[in-house]
Length: 142
Image 1 (cartoon, helix red, strand yellow):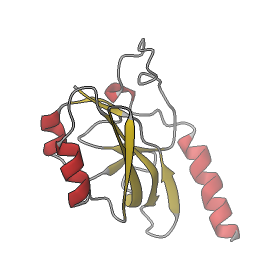
Image 2: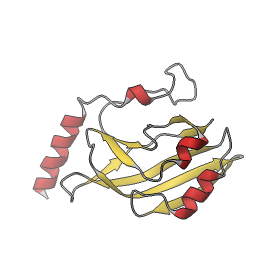
Image 3: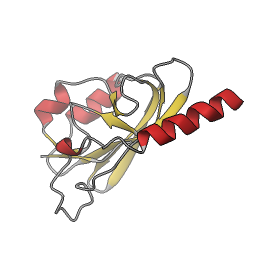
Image 4: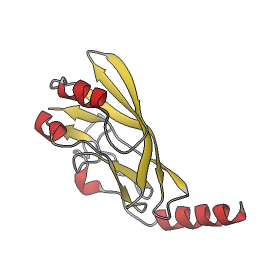
């Protein structure tokens, strides 16, 4: 227990000095909240992006999630995908870093203006046993 507390404190301090992947964020002047810049932490990456605008082609070419930030190299083992089309949200769960067939099917049906977000994402740190929450951002199909 004490070892985990020390490790968590060390990770928190280390992550406090790591700048997030701001080069992949949307326009900072955006009023949609997509352009906020975050510091530290574990960031969910899909199609090489940390949220923002995404094309249907980019969606179809990727089937897994990765972690960036100070916890880069962590392995996602659980997440929920919220897909919003025409104001209605559908939630799908997975128990790995890979999108399920059902998720891929739903994502392939998205049209410009539809949105999706990976939430409740958990990953094992590179040591293989400690768990970290992974922050995701909303994607908007263009």
